Image (tube, rainbow, N blue to C red):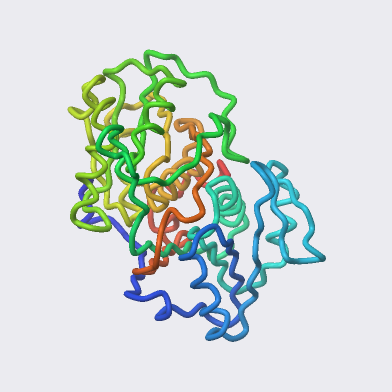
Length: 322
C-alpha cells in the first residue's frame, strides 16, 4: 500500500449525508442515477444561498442541465462544458459523483480545476449492493451492471499518443465485477507480466476486499497479476493518486493505461493524475450501463478538496497540461 503518513490528504468525512452542508455562494452539480443520490434533496432543504444544478444524462456524450430551459450540452465539446461552468461564481464548486456517471463528472472536474475554481467532489457510499442470484457459478457476487457498452475515451480525456507495447503497463482499479476486468483486458491485450491491479484496501467494509479478489479471481490467476497487486484505500482518491505516482516513479518513461473500473473515489484519483500527467497516462473505460436498483440506502458522505490537494502536491506543477 502507498505510504500516506507524510502525504497530504484533503478529505472531510460525515457519518451521515445530512451532516454535510455546502456553504452559501457555492455551486453544486449533481445527478440522480441511484437511490442514494437523493441525499441532495436534504441538502437543498437545509442549505441556503447554494445554486443546485441538476445534470441529466442523454446517452454517452450529452447532458441536459436544468438551466436555460434544460439546454442540451455535448460533453465532448470543451466550450459546452465551459458554458456550464460559467454560471459558477466565486464560491466553492461542488461536483457530486454519487449520482453521475464517469463520462459526466470527469470532464466537468477537469475543466473546473483548469478554471482555477475551488473544486470539491462529494461521494456518498451505499448501505448495501444488490447481490447476484447466480454468483456461486459465475463468480459475480453483486448484480451491478446490465451490460458493457464498449471501450471508448472519457470525454475530454482522449489520448492521441501512441505508446510502445513494451513500455506500457495496464493498471486496472478493480471492483467487484470480474467481467469488466476481463473485458477491458481482452480489448487492451496487455502482456500478462505488465498488468498491475489496484484493489481497495481497506474497503468501505471489512469484507469488500475479499469480494473483489473473488470476483476477479479468474483473470488474476490466469495472468498471475495478483503477484503485482497494489492497494489503495477504497474511499480515498488521493491514495489512488499516490499509488499511480509510485508506479510512475518506479518505471520512469513508461506509459500507463489506467482502467478506473473500481470505486468512484479510485476513479477520481485516476482522473486527477490524468489531468496533471496526460502524456504518461491514458484512461481506458468500458462505459457500463448501470442497473437502477444496484444499491440500497446511504451511509458515509465524503467531501474531497481537489484544488487544495493539487496545490499542496508537487505533481501540481504540471497543471499547465490541463
